[in-house]
Image (cartoon, rainbow, N blue to C red; front, side, top):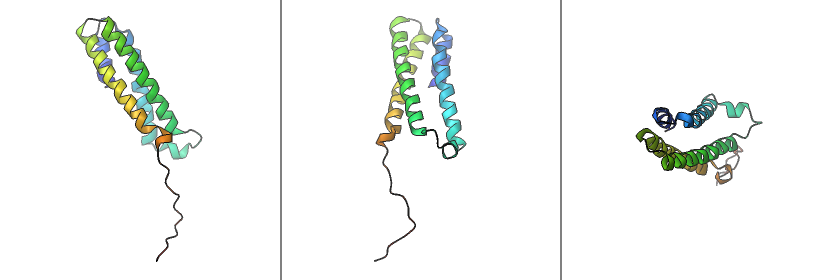
Length: 118
């Protein structure tokens, strides 16, 4: 959705909102790269759950605010499409933030390697 929003903002009459889609796309790609390279176990100083949560919250709020501004203020087709895709991206990022909330994650008991038999 970030790529679709980026293309639509670029095609609209006011391409000034392209920066938001580019920044969120870069942040999402960096987080995907970090998880793909298995960086969280190697860098335990960073709390990766909160980092992803904060990225999702900031992206969700910015997408929702700018999309509402674009939908209310612009009348060209590409701008309205960008606003709709931005609203969808904001809603999905909000849902992602809800899922990745670290305090909502359950903690499992640590494995001790000892199994009791009856």
